Image (cartoon, one colour):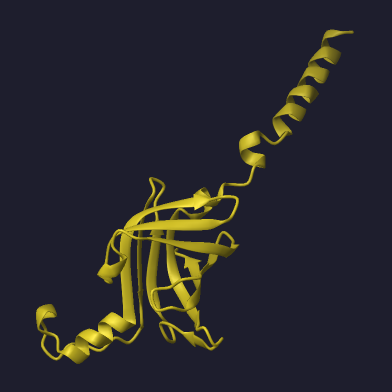
Length: 171
């Protein structure tokens, strides 16, 4: 073989190796990697024991769900139209005003983990707007996950319904 032929074959071999997908590129990201980031609320559809469906946070709900890579999470869901308090002081709401807020939103912070096989998100709640959940664990089963949308089912919500939440990747 002459030198030009060896260089040509070496170049072809090098290009062929460079074009092979690496293990990191060819593998799909884990569920945990796909979930990390911020998500905005699209809807929460609640189904009661009789099979009746309702939109838990009403039309155009507001919400943010954040999963960080270190295993911390934060979630807030709210009705779009919570009434203002008559007095501009958070500590002086009437019973009716406080009830409207408590039934129209929920917020929690804590830690999270994922079971890749069962597609189950487990949250451990450190603190939240409904203190009965503090120190408790909740699970949600992912029904669908794309780069831009997350859907999961919470089979045991605090209101006794089965809730399907839809979230959109925050931009």
